[in-house]
Length: 373
Image (tube, helix red, strand yellow):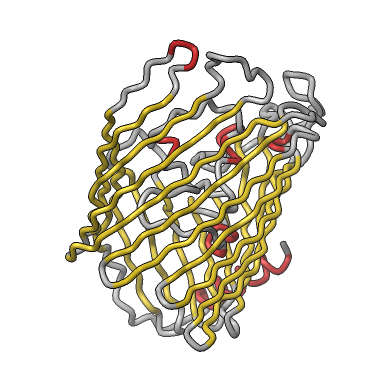
């Protein structure tokens, strides 16, 4: 933590003492993307649930970004990303960044942690297998806590102070610190003081750190990372409403990818202790995949497996697994045609009875257009 504070203070100090400032004021540019999908999914009607077979899904974001370089060499940038088709009041990635080649990058605001940017995982060219895309089509009963929906480091866009070192011979490290405000993780906009030891028994601090390497060796690219994350025990109580002991949540993950002759092979593994700060409720997950790209065409195949203890020190686990076969074709001008075939299974380790609302299984096919602008 001290290294983060020293590095961030140094960057801010250098910016403050600059006497000459002939740089132009920041002007924002507008960009973004729109993804529109149509698909057919056949899934179980557990517990008399009746899911739509043909569905339509979309995701749209607008970007407002700009930067300026001061006479002292520091680049000051702003980033404002807003969802345009969701009921998301908090937006996505809203931060100020101070950077230079020699001092690294410092971000302050609502953004992802340092470890997330360093992560490597299985490649996907259409629907993502490790970011919640499959759950948009096959209903997830939700017995695996939302914090363990992927094998990447935590992806919540919350209030943080984030620092990455300069890239030194392919190596780069990062660390971030933020406030974990209740069950919303780190994605709550803070409008005042947060009580981490009194009235709000779910609030406290969270941080993550990691190191990654990326390099090329005679036409073969290689990347790997190791990251760590901790969500500290919130409040003053030692047990939650269910009577379970509360402990710090800790997660360690590793990832790697190799690219050669148009192929990319990648995967990752994450092990978490005390999921959602419940002592002795552990989870793990891994993914593995391969992709191939040539000209405007690309295909990929990936698999994801996640499990979580049903209770403290339990011998049974909730399980989630799915595979995704994807293809894409670049039509030019920022337009890409994509398609995926996928299968998902969600199994409840507590009540695995037939016709249970806590389990589901489904197979689907989805096609759509991804447009960037």
